[in-house]
Image (cartoon, rainbow, N blue to C red; front, side):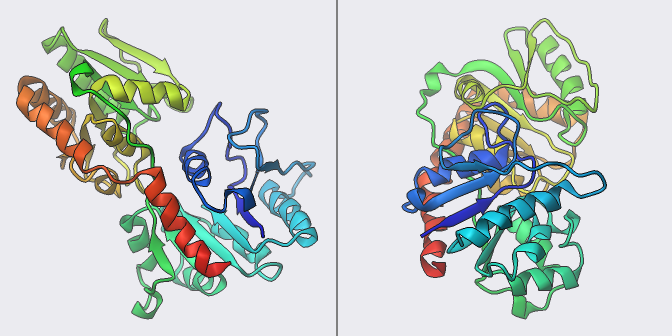
Length: 345
């Protein structure tokens, strides 16, 4: 038996620069009862891989030809020799047309807004996806609602299922939490970093015993904020980021754009941070008990942080409530994935 997982082209399935999709797969595959039957296919230039059951699809790039199409073609060359019992495609609905016909036992995962993705923007395209797949998985109810927008109710069946991203529930001691405000993510306007930067300078000026840690990078935008109590660490490996979540008191996820789910909010919740989020996309599903900023401004970010700093009992109760209600563990989600595999294999 063989389950093939096809990553998006250029998804780095590597500890060096793993994204949300790679982390999700790494965590759930290890716990799957099918782990010995799973092969992950991708394309990365990094040598180290997250799992040994990974095949790098190498091919020669040809001028004027789509690299994504060549990537899928390389996968199909392998598929024709050793057919999979099930193919799971992550976040690339446009791969389906090439694969359908060679193997029709297909599951598609959406990690982003379907209405903004190639081959799933129109109602006609989404109906085609529905007809050519055995199962469609969404990382949040928000993403599911986007997919079903404009579709007849007959398409809203159990073929469509929400399976959130997951992580481990961290072992923490609330007494060891430090006076640290944490921002993790791309340092761009979509993530609200331009507003966070201005707000955190004011917060640190008013509270000299507190520190801010910023983890992330963004080569396409340049937002410069400096303070003697703020450190910008750049991109860090997952295990380093996890340690910061465990020791930090407050985590701010102030996205402007509609987050399809929200990996940072998920990780912060699993480590018992007092989480502050915006009401964008699926963020409230990643951290249902978080403090919500309903109108995103510099002042509202500042006020939300200050509210927790000035009220110790509120901060502690928020931390404990978020941690107590965290349930999106790798074990829980891996079992949900295996349950649909049981029916399709």
